[in-house]
Length: 250
Image (cartoon, rainbow, N blue to C red; front, top):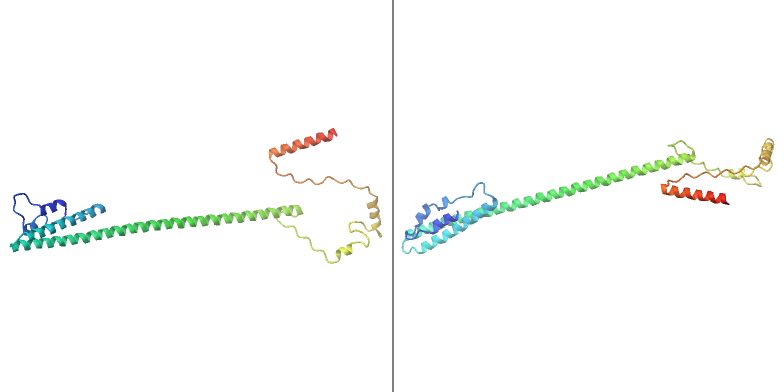
């Protein structure tokens, strides 16, 4: 019920006789004719309308009770006002229940929306955690591949140094048999020295070994050049030129 309906139930034109309970019950503000909530009303509009209808019903009930008290000996008028007050009190209670149900519906909708937000946040957190685990697993796999490649390069370098074909590890040297070193060692000499007492065909080789002039020691094997920057190479070249000039001057 709107404020206009409440006004027509509680106020009468000046100079007009007061309305009786039957006139109020049959008028435009009767409880059966109270306007209901609009079908497309928003939540805020519906709640405000229900609250306004409750306030209007409360004012009408108070007005009816006041008219019943002023009726005096007119039993019919008093009973009519009381019946009308009872009808508007029932409307007040009905609107109060509707308002409670509406507020409960809003509360459940708000809780459902909050739960949906929490579920969405949990899904995002789970997705981020799964992505983090995937990144960690990918990093571990890349690290394992890098370590395997490093081991393969190290094995290939070892094979090249040992003279073995690339891709195959050089066979480890077989352990010497016990006593083999003592057997190869002459009674009174070093294993690297030739036998002091050659016999038979070894005599010619023994003579050539001691008669041949000593061989000149060759240059030491050059170490592989390190990966130097351009500035480092220029500095090394200047040092070499300076050393060459010092040698010529000396």
